[in-house]
Length: 295
Image (tube, rainbow, N blue to C red):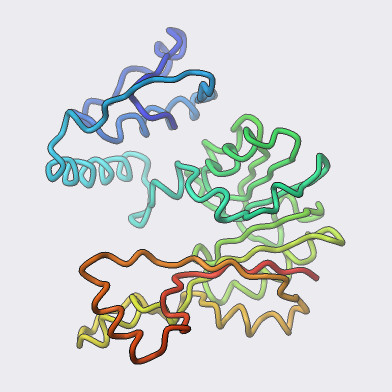
C-alpha cells in the first residue's frame, strides 16, 4: 500500500476501483483500503524513489483523538476484508524490520540466490527487498486466503498460497535462505515445518527461525506483580522449543541475532530492580532470538 499524502492515480484505475471509502473519514486506513483495492483489481502500487516531497504530517489530527480514530478505522478495515481479529496491519502491509530479520545475508548473496520467507502474508517485506536487490530471486509463502487474493500477483516477487507446508507450491525447489517467524505458527507444527524447510535448503543453505524468549521480563512482570494475566502461553514457540528440536532434526546453529525489547522510562527502575536479582548478564531483556541454522 502507499501512504496517502502524495499519490497519482490513473483515471482508468480510478474508474474501475472507485473513490475513497468514506467510512474511513476524516482519515487513517483509507489509503490502506485503497491500496488493497488496487491490488485486487490487478494493478500495482508503485513507489517513486527518485522524488522528494516535504510532508508536514500530523497537522490534521489531535494526537489523542487520532489514536482512537486509528483504532476504530483499523476495526473497520478488518470487518471490510473479513480479516481475523488479531490482524496486524504493520506485519501484513508494511516492510518494517527487513534487514533486522535477514541480517547481513543479503550483502553476501549472489545473483543466483533464492530467498524464501514463510508466512510472508501480503509480501510487503519481499517486495521491498526485491526492489533493493533486483538480482536476487525472492519467494514467499502465505497461509491467509484473504492475503493470497492480493499478494500472489505482486510484481517482482513470487508469492504463493499454501494450506499445508508439506505440500506447498515450492516444495521441490532449493533455497539459499529460508526465513520463518515462529510466532506465526503453533507449537505442534514446529517439527513438521523444520523437517520440510530443511529439505528445501540448498547444500549451503541457511534456515533462519525467529522465536520468542520465554525469559523476557515482560512475560513475567505481571505475574510478579500478582496479576493472573500473562502473555505466556503453552501454544507459543519459545527459544527453548527451538533448542529441543535442533538435535532431532540434525540442524546446527551457526549464529544468533538477539532482539532486545524497548524499555519505557517508567519501567526502567522496575527493570533495574529485576536485574539486581537475576544479574546483569541475564537474557531477560531479550524479547526474541533469530537462529541462523544449517544442515
